[in-house]
Length: 185
Image (tube, rainbow, N blue to C red; front, side):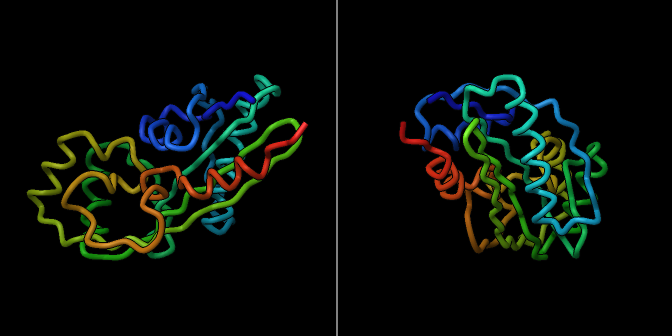
């Protein structure tokens, strides 16, 4: 069976390689439309499903894995920052506080489609203005939901739940979904 990751994220590619020895990468062209009427968990799943379906429509002979990660703070969904100024504002807002990271995962082949999510509680260290400025200047937060990567040092004080979920691909959940769509022929 052939597998496809519907994401250009190098972090997702690295995590998926822990459970799948071979897969191809076909980034989704699906538009990431945020529907604020949905609960964050449902929205992450809907976005993951849209990405998965988009890539599946190109070749239905493969098993496609689609993901979407969102950060939720104070009931507000924080996506990827538009620019460095927004990244800085987001990091100042999260400094010393707790938020949630939710990743929706959709796995689909021609026999089955399974969708689920993982949620991790994350508490930030108190970040100085100098730290935030330096971190934003590094460019690292600009392509990440919530303007940060848990793997980048100095940001996170503690977390409860899946570390790989915060990176962008909850490995245990993804393996469970992949096992769930396997068909014995």
